[in-house]
Image: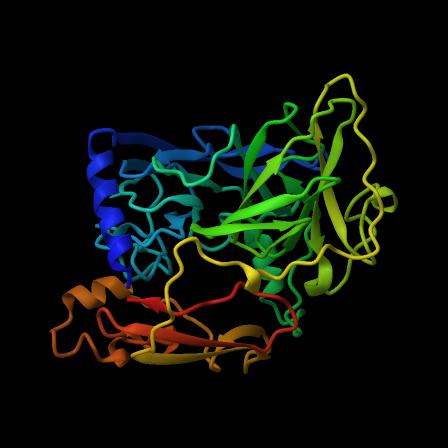
Length: 443
């Protein structure tokens, strides 16, 4: 629960922004197009308005976003999720198909009928009352690794930090095959161990060998976003320190680091002060952590022997350019990744941890089921989408049933939580790979 100071600040901010806030009206025609971001393989991707990558959504605190999505895919439903937004009071615009996303032509014969059907449209309409770095992506099957994702930035009119300019830097793994084909082979009897598909490349800002420009002496905010399907990324700029000021939409006290770690879907903002000299450009590196990869194919990157990677890591390199007449240097070799301990970060507005009203334990496990296929599970249950979207069940069920988890389906693994309760989630990771952490939250 926010403190009185935070609540007053929010009210004042909403009031002060009410005059400046605007309605941002966008129309996204979701279509297939083609792209070749790693220069090695042109393939079909899911783009917006005939282009790829989709545009960044850029808003100010208090703006109302009116985003009309026209599904022009001829073979799939779709839906968008603004990752990290609370959607308090507008969770029907949150986007996960089968949970809160449904459509007026709902038909139980279709496995994903609750998404936006081909040739149909849906308008997402909500006000943003958060600040920070987020991203928006499809929440249908593997559509976002096929390209339907972009950064979602909300600017703070009362920004607590001072900087001269800001830039978004995204990271993603990239596959040459489309997700339906990869998903079929992944969920197959021929893959009993559940080995995930290995990316064919790493991308930074949806391409390779990119640049960002620094001017001497200026301070820049880099909004780092990991939009990968699978890979965790390490990021650093050679010979530059970074001050972390935001993690997943929460401002932190400045904390100086030499490298940042981002697991899938995580966002971190850092301040970087440019050098006073412009005589040299510097490599910036996004290295995929291959600890979760079953193997690292030799063709993962054609110049792997020249890359800056400790042990078996693979990266994408860009450059901070001070002068376009300077050469862009080859990254230096590392013996190990830079230290990263996110438990040391302190929120700019710290709050005491309240005792939980409820506690849920989630054990992450992987195992082979009776059909011979390997599944990920919470508490021994692998999620199966319900025939009726969960939110529709909540709204249509008699009030004396809505708090009964059984009406939502055993294989959705439901937990029914009390309104305004403090909920503690205990997440036990039985996997060998890193996953984003979960902390107590208020319902």
